[in-house]
Image 1 (cartoon, rainbow, N blue to C red):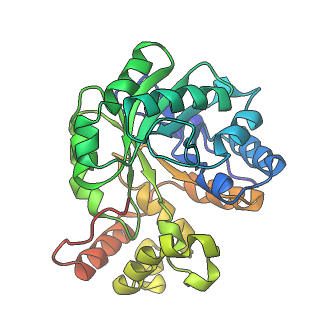
Image 2 (cartoon, rainbow, N blue to C red):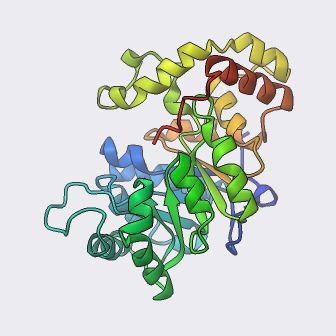
Length: 316
């Protein structure tokens, strides 16, 4: 029987008026790996049919916005649509990155690409704290919100910048890295999002499949995935020990996703895939709910043992 995310498991998305499925779709891989539009349509429609109601993409993810816009054109009102702006990509015809003019231009382009008159959440895409505070880009997203083009303003990033963003009155959503190999933001960011009732999207909840060797990863992703693999090796997490603690015969992808979903301050964990067959596995894992507390405690202790001086930052 195919797993379904039931609406009664949707989570309140901070102080927004939205409720979101615990599993969301991340649109980076389909853009960066140039997935065929027909396959994207199959993936997204299968996810929406089975209860996933949040889709995340970005101006910088190659053609991700265009193919998502086409795939959900008839189902726009069934999803919470999230995109990102500010970071430069292959668009030298536009103003310089991290300027208000660039943010304004990319928001307009995202609306066209996504075939919509409003984007539910627009995130600034992983700028550093100084740019977040002084570039004027946040003010431009807020202006788009006030004009009705964006419903909620937010920030995607990690560490001190994400914690600062969570305290800003105009930021309603923060997307930050939380996973097996990326636990810094649990202590550094989640307390601030909780205190200020900010919606939280966990990015990279599968830690870029750090249990795989680099040779088993897509070649163009290897340098990006290397720090996750190094952390996973340093942690020396034992699969049998996690299974014993949880009392379940789990595999790494399920452990990783359910670990991230075990934190009440996380409202949705976004997982990207280019393969329709992966959809069922992700749905099955998410539908089982959070990882048992004993498993979470073991993974947290293993992280602290591998990084006793807390020097591992959230990986942006």
